[in-house]
Image 1 (tube, rainbow over the protein chains, first blue to last red):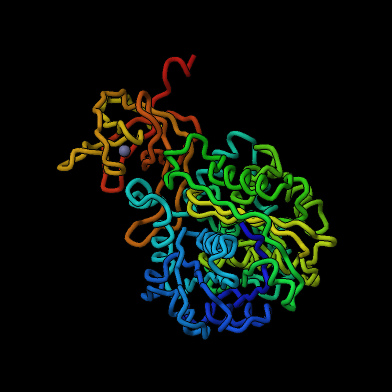
Image 2 (cartoon, each protein chain N blue to C red):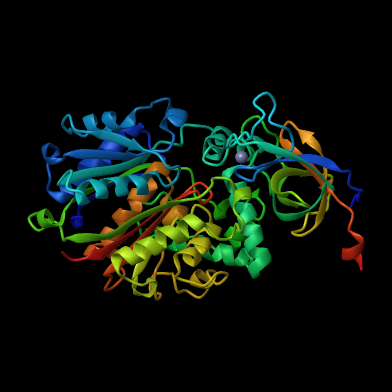
Length: 386
Length: 120
Ligand SMILES: [Zn+2]
């Protein structure tokens, strides 16, 4: 398999956007191609991560529409869906296309336009990422599923709501430094602990917001990257794993088997250890999800993930900053864009272009993108340099 | 807590994927998830709460608040269900519940009596 590099990144700012999904996707694509110094005529294949554009906006068949709006030629355009991991899966499909030799330059984008649906309808659409028959039909909203996970984590490991609040406070502090973030305001522990209850024990500030936005990356064969203008970043590993969408099918709901498997495979294929990673973007759709991810990836032992935010280890300036972009929590969570946006943040950091939120000396980064309540997981490991 | 005694109930376990159903497969006769054969089994109807959440923001066409729980049903396995009858009391992880019946929103459990063993 050939070595794959990331030659360009582009973000259509996350938040409440008036543009439709096609325009948002095309905006991110154009920024990424300009960043890579690659014109649309050089893109050979296009993958688009998107979860539910049909349900949110009525528009389906999004990949060729975005490609056309971005000025791409009559190339293969494929939409990839894996709930909240749609973006990460699209990146993986693009990486496989380059690694296999099927294409030299691939454009990958992710997009979601969510804020035009009402909150009840949005809860219903997101719940469809779970198991319809035995979860959504009972009213098991997405927050409710993670709330049960949080409750069990509290029961088994003594995790407290204060521990969850620390994750929200940290990620909002990071989002404060990201001009592309949906929420750029810092929050206090007290605000997190007194926010409106969504599904006990989770409160509003434990949940990632509903956002619009898009992100894109240009992937290429590493030998081509040397001739392109941006500082090169290598994709060392791209791994993916799955599990049942239904919580009742999992033995221990405080551990996502899909994350454990994908992370193990990623570390093995990259030839690096968890302790060598300098920074990570992990899937904090809820505060408890960041804690689970830190444990399942292998950064912390099970039950000890709370130490990350509580002791400042995962904050900017800590031993291994996590979610320097603000994470889903503050940067926003336009579902299909999230996994691609994580890659954009790592590339920015590994190039040394992250400004006030730069992790000094960052050389190795990990992205963890999760779909549903642990049914799909994509893990990528990136390295600075050619 | 409004304690009640459990009534025995027949559940249908899937021989393929292991899921527990409270109704037989209807016309198709198989598991609604994977299609494999179901085996009926009489169980006590007692279970314990593995995890729960009181949901305050509901999807369209549902009224909040309501309580969801993953319940470990004696002799059957883990099921997602609705909890009812806790009044002002909050369910607890490990707390006893009993099967009440099927509802349009899935299986319904109520607060159960604490078993002799647990009481001792
Ligand atoms: Zn089955």
